[in-house]
Amino acid sequence: MTVLGERLRDRRLDAAPTRAQTIAFGASGFPTQLMAQTFSAFIVYFYVSHLAVPAGWVAAAMIAHGVLNAVLNPVVGTISDRLRTPWGRRIPWIGLGIVPLVVAFALVWMPPELPAAGLIVWFLVVVAVYDIAFVVVVLNISALFPEIFRTTEERARGNVPRQIFAILGMVLGTAGAPALYSALGWPGMALVLGAVCLVLLVWSFLGGMIERRVPEAASEAMRWGDQLKYTFRNRAFVPYVLGSLFVQTSIAVILAAIPFYVRYSLGAAEGEGSLLLGAIFVTAIPSIVLWSAVVRRTSPRTAVLWSVAVFGVAVLGYLAPSDVLGAVLVGVAVGVGVGGLLQLLEVMLAQIIDEDAVRTGHRREGAYFGVNGFVVRGSVVLQAIVAAVVLTASGFDATLGDAQPESVDGGIRLMLAVIPLGFTALAWLCFWLYPIRARDI
Image (cartoon, rainbow, N blue to C red; front, side, top):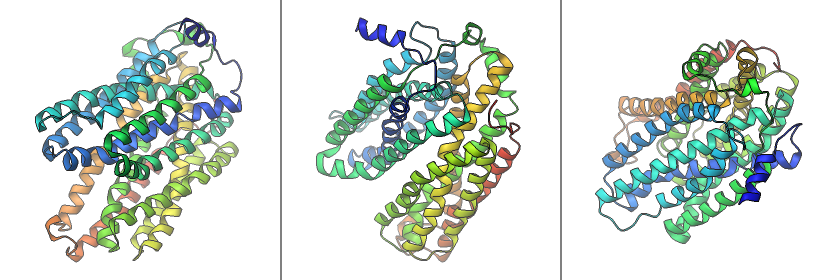
C-alpha cells in the first residue's frame, strides 16, 4: 500500500497525455454513466413494482436523493479546490471514493428481507452513501479534464474516447440491465454491473488520472466567499450554465416523452421505444468525432452554436412521423446534435476555467463543475413540470389505456418536439451571448 501511495504521489503530468493515458481516462465515462442510467431508469420500478414499496414513499425518497445530489455538487467542488495533499487535489478523493461508490450501487439492488418501512429506510441510507460517493468521484474526474487536456485541440481529441465510453455505458445501463435482471435476478445484475464498474474505474484511475504540477500561487486555496463571488460574476459562466440547463432540460423532456409517443402517438408496442433511443445514441457516437473536428477548426462557441441549432431543428421532426421507422429516422438526426452537445459542453466549460485562472490566479475546476452540476439538476424539476402540465392539459388518463382522446396525441407531440425546441432556442441565445470568441485563452 505504501509503494502504491508513493507511486501515486510521485506521478505528475508535465506534457500532453499519451494515447494510452487518454483512453484510460476516457474509460471512466463507461462505469459512471452505466451506474447513473441504470439507477435513473430502473430504481423506481424495482422498489415500487418488485418490492411493493408505496409509490408515494419512493417518490419522496427520490426527491430527497435529488436535493442531496444537487447540494453536494458545489460543496464537494469547492472543498476539492481547497484540498492540499502530497497526492494532489483530486486523486485522493477519487481513490477513496471508488469502492464505496461501487458497493453502494450494488447494495441499492440487494436489500434484506424487510417490511416496506424498513425498505425505504434502507433506500435512503444506501442511496445517501451512493450520492456522496458518486459526486465525490465523478465531480473530481470531471475537474481533472481541463487540467489534463490544456488546449482546445487537446480537449477536442481527449474528450472523444470519454464520450464514446459514456454512450456505451448509457446503452448498457438502459438496454443491458433488463436482460441481466431477467436472467440473474436483481442481486445478480447488481454484482455483475458492480464488478464491471469497479474494474473500469480502477483501470482509469491507475492509467489515466494524473494531476499536473501547478504554480504555487495557482494552487493556493481561495476563500469561500471569493469562490462564490468570482464564479457567479464570471460573464462567460452565467450564459454557459443557463444554456447547459436548457439543453439538459430539452434532452430530459425528450427521453420522458418517448415512451408516451411510442404507445399513444405511434400506436406501437412499448418495447419499440428502445429503437428510438438506440437511433439517438448509436448516431451520437460517430458524430462525436465529427464535432471534435469542427471545434478544432473553429472555436467552442461556434461549434456549440451549430450543434444546438442542429439538435433544435432535428427534434421538430418528431411532429411528423406516423410509424416507428419515421421516428427512428428523426432520431438519427437528433443523435447528430446530441453527439455535439456531449462532446462540446465540457470543452467550453474548460475554456471558462482557463479564463478564470488567468483573471484570478487560481485553478478552480471543482467549483465550476460543482455549481454547474447544481444548476443542471434543475432540468429534472423542469422535465417533471412539463410532463405533468402537458399530460394533464391534453386530457391523458392512465385508466383509459390505449383509448385516449385525440388531444393526447397532439399534447405528446408538443412535449416531444415543440417544447424541446423552445428550450433549445433559449439555450442557443445563451450560447450566442457567451463572450469568449477565441479557440484558446
